[in-house]
Figure 1: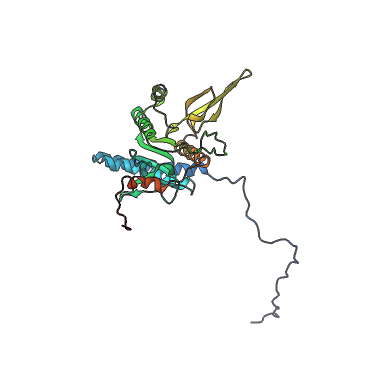
Figure 2 (figure 1 turned 90 degrees about the horizontal axis):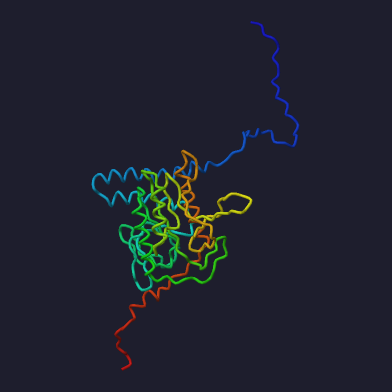
Length: 311
């Protein structure tokens, strides 16, 4: 079969360089934003899932395991969310007189060389009081009695020796001394509307020597916080600052408020995120004192027997 003359293969001509890359850049549609709401809701979901496992243990009458499921989940979340300059522990506080507090579910602690006087096999720590930024109580369901019991626990800490750091930190928070202790409660849920019970708590504790926690977080409802209000002749009352440490607030027009954060579907995560932000604000504003090991060991030297070796 006859064929025509063969054509020589030709290479495609290269385009002259234009000074621009010929690679196509991906098109970005709109403004790309990080979905922090979903991340926080995922964190809250870990705590809510732990509540479900706790209920399984509770139905077998294993109350300790039921409670520890939620507590461990909360400590794990805070360990991720709080600065690397702190550690999250649980156990008891110990002062220089070797007095011991009751059980603390969450202790946010500065990692010093003396951060743990002892650690038990179950993770319970005995922590020098000077090392502690904040303490928290964790409960599954909100009740008025839980808040009153924790308030009594806070009042009992007044019997422990915690020397004040008279150096005032330079921060947005006007602390009267450097190392106040922050306290909070975290509830996973409230079966009923907590507003009436919260009003009763504020009235009852406001007329006693027992303090309210600095923050009460009910994941599905909001946070109970102390707030300052701004009002003048030309405008209605509006929300001012949140008082991280209400004991130092001097504004006359202030009150405790239930404040829901976030939108439906992200409420639990937003409330958890605000509590973490308040803890970070306190950590950055607080100046702890280093524990003195010799002061803790001082009791060992009282009435000490001895035998001179030069006689």
